[in-house]
Amino acid sequence: MSLVTASHICVRFGAEEVLHDVSLSLAPGEIVTILGPNGSGKSTLLRALLGIVPVAEGSVTRAPGLRLAYVPQRLMIDRTMPITVRRFLSLPVRTTDTAAAEALARVGMAGREADQMTQLSGGQLQRVLLARALLGQPQVLMLDEPTQGLDQPGEAAFYRLIEEVRHDTGAAILMVSHDLHVVMAASDRVICLNGHICCEGTPRVVSTAPEYRALFGLGTQGALALYRHEHDHDHPADEPHPHHHHHDHHHA
Amino acid sequence: MLDDFLTRAALAATGLSLATGPLGSFVVWRRMAYFGDATAHAAILGVALALATDLPIGLGTLVVALAMAVTVAALSSRGWAMDTTLGVLAHSALAFGLVAVSFFPTVRTDLSAWLFGDILAVSRTDLAVIWGGALLVLALLAWRWQALLTATLSEDLAHAAGIRPDRERLVLVIALALVVALALKIVGALLIAAMLIIPAAAARALARTPEAMALGAVVIGMVAGLGGLGLSLWQDTPAGPSIIVVASGLFALTALRQRG
Image: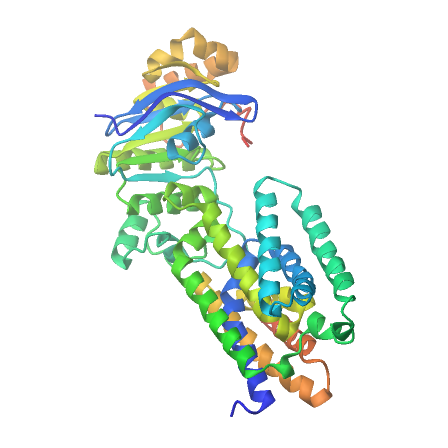
């Protein structure tokens, strides 16, 4: 059974074709990551699946009555708008205090209902966005580079949280990332995108695919090697982690 | 009671605040201040057209303000350079309106009433229109409140929740045109945007939720309306600008309180 299916979709912005002949489907309970360099159409694919961006060709189908939640890349709340965490959780669907408290506790933000949204740190804001998404008891959760702007421990903690969510709720999770080591740790399946689907499969299969290596170049192989090394042995948690450079950290 | 012109003026000002409070909050949140200006300035053109066609002034204003608001909204969604576009549209609407109005000698002598309002001349009928219109705007905003707030926070979040951001924007545009038509008599074309923005901005400093800010803007707008009338009576100043003067004073007070 597939929850969301895209078949042969093309997306064009004016004359430019951003996505060409992309097909994918999402099954219950799996974590799929869309991986690709800057400008490869990752966010556009997610937005096409959500119906924010129209598809020029092909089609997107959802299971009937599908509950779908979305965590955007970032949320810029204008400083002129006063809004508490609690109030934000009730948009657009009003929720009870109990449900809001539970959702906040699940993402590690218990008791922060009265905080102003504009005063949260990047990591706290992502957690609140996730809590809001969970309130709808989604069958599919879509996240667009959810850890952008987080430091490494924050990032690792966030992906652990995503895995917990999948484990507890059985929701299918579709993420966009350019972050290789995270993908390797957290995904069941990786889709490597550069305008079209270059390759896809388990993280291990994709990481050895020539298309993937061509796309990410040599620097990546170094990071992957380091990654494997890390996971072959048990390192103490406080040891500094190797970190590769993000070429596209300021993804538009 | 309604026989007294001051009572009618006070009721007109409080009635208008019911609509400008919440709508003004959206204007502030969505950074539509210039948008409000363009729509309000177009009202003068509406006055001229109404006179030329013998239609009621209120209707002419509403139609032209609506046309302007829809045009601006359409241009902005196509990614025009909004600052410049709005500047051109706002000031040309005002200039065209002033030139067009000058062809009607009776109005020419009374131009300042359209530019700065004539709240002391509000009739019973005006009062009924102002309250009816304000309640209509309030009902429209209350009906779309959750969707409007979501779309204001993030169009993507709104989309994902099945809300159409462009439709919500249209709700605001229609509400804005209605308020412009209502407010013309009270504060005049030049100061309508001030009546939207200043009370909402003053309420921002005191509020923790969007609803509290909207409510605060209503209260501050009412206080400014009554205070402005008082000032006008006491110092024999023009009523419309006096209302805005008091509103700015309240804004300064809340801003200071936030700093302190």
